Amino acid sequence: MLLYIYLIAISAEAMSGALAAGRRNMDIFGVCVIAFITALGGGTIRDILLGNFPVTWTQHPEYIYLTVSAGLLTVILSRFMHHLHRVFLLLDAMGLVAFTIIGCSVALRLDYPTVVVLMAGMITGICGGVLRDILCQRLPVVFRHELYASVSLLVGVLYLQLERLGVHADINLAVSFGAGILLRVCAIYWRLSLPTFSYSPQQWK
Image 1: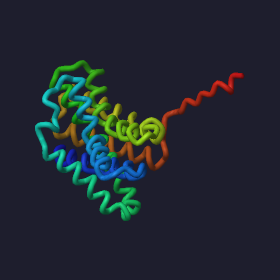
Image 2: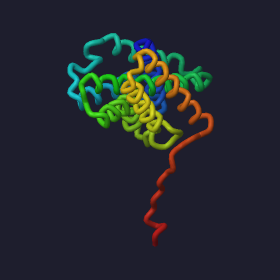
Image 3: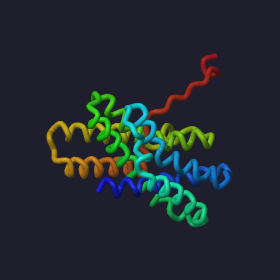
């Protein structure tokens, strides 16, 4: 089940990357690059940091075809994308949770300490979007809107706790995935966010 969710998630993330590239008036090559990086960038950074070689997508070239195709499809369907905003929010939430669980699973398999496992989950979940926003010259969305990175962290904590309690892998996946989606949807609906820090030297003069 996680594989199918993963495929949906990287497709949705690739489309969000393509839309971000379109807002910056990039050419078709730029659209494809941003789509690819948004979808697979988080997992690539995770694999490099954890020494998990070869990097996952290099062994699955179909992921490259899928993300690039999703980016090009976005160009074709761009005029209809504003009607699919809520669908994209749900798909993005699915991607965040699925990537987080996958990242934690990889780090667990490599016997890393708990804090590293949680960081691996968060890196997988949010870094694709961070790279997208940096390349498109805007402040990363994950640091300024409704709970996002925090959802990734909480999903990772829940997944690890259930793993340590010996909960069956499929049940753990279902519970962690469902809880993560619910939390992210609630954060969007009620606009839940962490306190922000605003600093200006002028205010202390």
